[in-house]
Image (cartoon, rainbow, N blue to C red; front, side, top):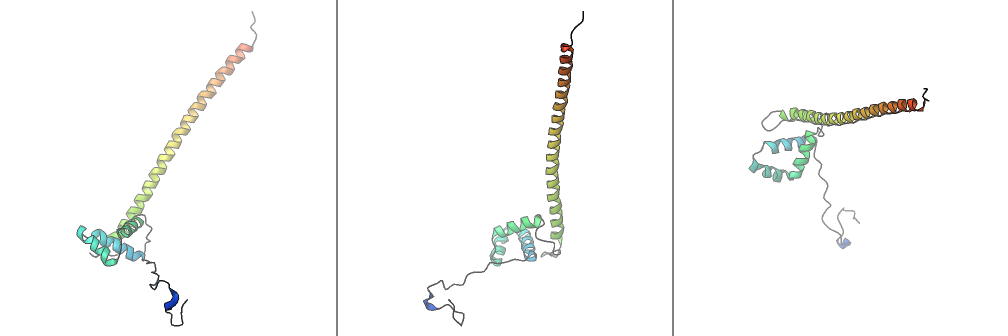
Length: 146
């Protein structure tokens, strides 16, 4: 229960610490942090994470999202060196992902085609066998004249 001043009453017995709010990061910030992290020397990567209050799992997740093209194309972010290489990398990665997807689909379709051809071959052989049996049955059922 809150008072008119907005403070918790002393007799409430609840936790006096306010509930932490969930942090939300913009796509621009995520792309900038991933670029800065990737361009940093190995010894400085931890310092970047500490300075920004991030975890390595954030960077991993954001890198995967960037490579999948899910961080949005909000413009080409500029890295610390002033280059705009990250935007080109996102496009290339999205193309690579689509290429891998199409290759998997092609392999599946080729396997299905092979199965269909084998089934057609079996059906053709079965048809030929049945015709041969039918012909031999017709010749056996006809009476022979001497």
